[in-house]
Amino acid sequence: MKRVSLIVRAALLCLLANLIFHLPAVARPARKPSSNWAQWRGPDSQGISLEKGLPDEWGDNKNIQWKTAIPGQGHSSPIIWGNRIFLTTTIEGPVAPDVKPPSHTFNNEDFVHPDWAGAGRNYKLGVICIDSQKGKILWERIAYDGPIAEYRHRKNTYASATPVTDGRHVYAYFGTEGLYCYDFGGKQVWKTSLGYINQLGMGAGTSPVLYENLVILQCDLRENGVGSFMVALDKKTGKQVWKVTRNHRYSWSTPVIVRTGARVELITSGAETVVSYDPATGKEIWRCEGVVSNAIPSPVVGHNLVVVSAGSQAKRAMAIRLGGTGDLTNTPFVAWKYQKGTAYVPSPILYGDYVYLMTDAGLLTCLDAKTGEVKYEGKRAPVPAKYTASPVAFEGKILITSEDGDTFVLKAGPDFEVLRTNSLGEPVYASPAIAGGKIYIRGARHLYSISNEAGK
Image (tube, rainbow, N blue to C red):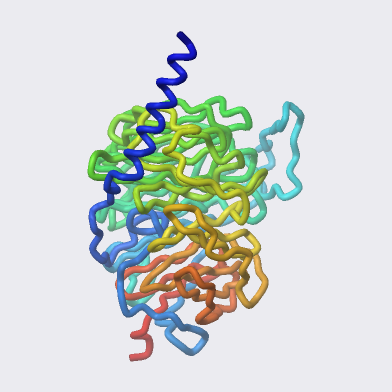
């Protein structure tokens, strides 16, 4: 009987594979160019702009429309809606003598990371609104003012999660220090705490996403995943609408909302599993084997596939076909895997027919998105550097920005070609944003507006 059931299962899998490869792909609805960049990685969270006529060359005396000094520190990317830009920042204060940093364990042993920093001081965590035309700071609001006990990685900040907006309100997340909602005039509408977000003293990095009336966050905690959860809050009140537990160790990946012809999915990357949820209810739709490493890069979507990657303990990129249910591990829904060339921090980008992977040292790989076939690998930009920012793309070009502040403009496609090298002259850790014919890059000290209209 068992042998018969195995034969039946094998036959069904073969039939399923045949259907997958011969049915027309479920595509996302065609997206129109938008003048807004409302969340982490912009429209659809994919880092892709459909705008035309954007600048691809800039420097000290070319195409810099304005640069504005930003108080404090932060690696959150700018988001833009109309003529408003929003950023978060953290301003370090004095030592908090009565605040003791929490202890951490790894592999059931006391753990101290050599790159921990920042714990046991007072901080101001703030939201900044800037006029996109003139670069003038319109308002600054302090969301949290007090001690922070938890460590952060020395390259991280306490303001690294990118805010999100629906055009009326902006939602800013600061990990343990809470989630805050402001209107466009700077009035705080609500605030809420999600509890202690234990991420091994590395600091928060996951950004919130919006779905209809919900603000959704992925909160993967601790080495063993105990206490991890997904949560959706009413965006008008901050009240919890649904919450589901997850057995996933700490991650910093931002989930993506994927709209297909059949349904809407909230897809999350994790070391243990990749999981798709119904964003309205939190009900699980499907799951698949995970990325093995700490999940930091966000998923990318195209050609009826979602591609996840990670690059800490192990290197892995994996494409999963959309449309499945249940456990998809070791089924034809796993389209391809690639076991090198992935980044610890930067997310990949799926642009046109290709997936572009980048290591933290800037080595680039191009894969056919449908098949995983390697088009090129191990290519490097002209100047060796480290990378934290994720790539963005427009008009057949891909922009990668190094920690040194150099942006390399690559020609999209199966052949590696560097078109331009542009420098801002200050470190950059935040990912660029594109809106209204301009490219916005947040440096360590300034926000830059790059435009072909500069100087006219």
